[in-house]
Image 1 (cartoon, rainbow, N blue to C red):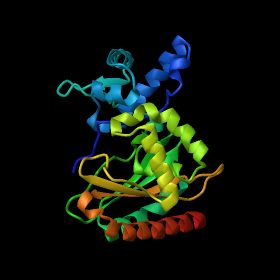
Image 2: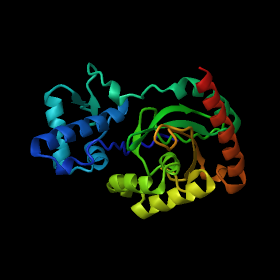
Image 3: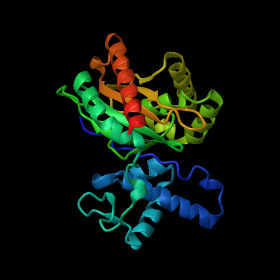
Image 4: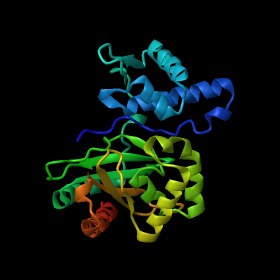
Length: 270
């Protein structure tokens, strides 16, 4: 099952509309740049940029033309998709290094082998989630809902909901309000997101009954503790819907708890 590259959300310009003209243009340009960078080698189309940035198509196109004029973005002739120019190095668009990551990799491999479905490690990054690792399981059909380095707004994916559920409800509500304009593209509303967060607080994990790819489901467990409260990381298992039934869910959550504890243990001793 192919990765869903339709949307690559960033929230670098949440308050851009309230800024003076020059500042607004700069922030919007960086927002579009990050959307293109998140598309990787596959690139993104104009419609994808407009949806992901919540900008009008003419505005998105104008900013893309400006970035192309500066040699930062290129448009592939065959597909008309936009990519970052090969000579441009954008470390901020790539997965951030994290103390948990080195400790996590062996355990992610074990988890994927045991569970059989795709396992993701996601970190909280401001108002976003950032996928920093993905390991495929052994089941013949794997769900690749996102690539390493992809960012999405907190409050729409199972990992983002699980992470927000570890914060006080008032703080989670404020974050979802900032991200709410992005939610409809994923079939979510503000109330849907808030209800999912409350439910995750109650049961200790988050699950999307309908994953980002039709016919799939995803379950996430947040773990760890960061300064100021809330968990910094989440483990996610994504699989086809028939493999993510309630009877199997308990075993998956138990496995994720075990591997989360092992990751934290090894990160502390590193």
